Amino acid sequence: MLDALRSPWPWWVAGPLIGLVVLFVFWYGGRKWGVSQSLQHICAATLPRGIEYFRYDWRKDGSWNLAMVAGVVLGGFIGGRVLSGPDDVVAISEATRADLIGFGITDFTGLVPSDLFSFQALLTPTGVALVIGGGFLVGFGARWANGCTSGHAISGLATLQPSSLLAVIGFFLGGLISAHFLLPLLF
Image (cartoon, rainbow, N blue to C red; front, side, top):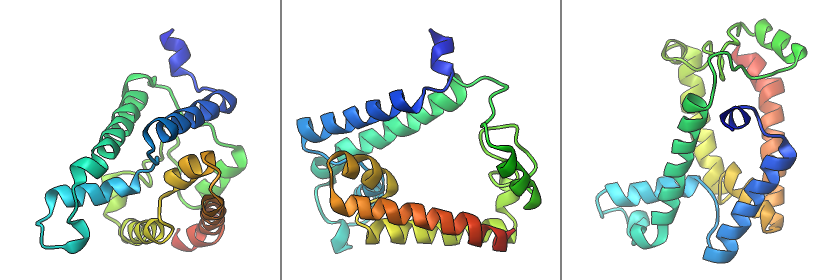
C-alpha cells in the first residue's frame, strides 16, 4: 500500500480528485479554494489594528483558509519527506535537461535543482533578483487578478468562472514568456 502512495498518481486520477474536493468545499461550505488570501489573513491576525485593510474578523472569514494552507504545507512535507524515496528524481525530457545544462543548472538529483533552490544560490545577484523580483510580481499579479494560480486554476475553473479561465490563460502565457525569454536573460 505504501509503495502505491510513493509512486506518482496518473493525471486522470489526481486531477478529478482535486476537482471533487474543490466542488465539495465550494458546494458544502460556500468557500473558494486559494492560497494567496491566506497571507491577508495572517497579516490581519498579526499586524497592529492601525491598517484599515487588515481590520476585519480574520477568525470568522479566514480560519478555514489558514487551516487549508496548513494542510497543504503538511501534505507537501509528508509527500516530500515521508513518502519519497532517496532515489526519487523529477522526470524531465532530455531536451529540457540539455537547455538547463546550457544555463548552468547541472544538479538533477532531487525534486528541485540545488543550483537554483539552495541558500548558496539565493545569495547570488541572480538569486536575489529572482526572489525579490519574482516575489513582487507574483504578489502583485495575484492581487491584481483577484486570486492566485491555485485559486483560479482549481477553484475558479471547477466552478466555471470565465474570469478564472482568462486568468489561467494569462498565467500560462506569462510562464511561457518567462521560461523562453526571461530565463535565458537571467542565466
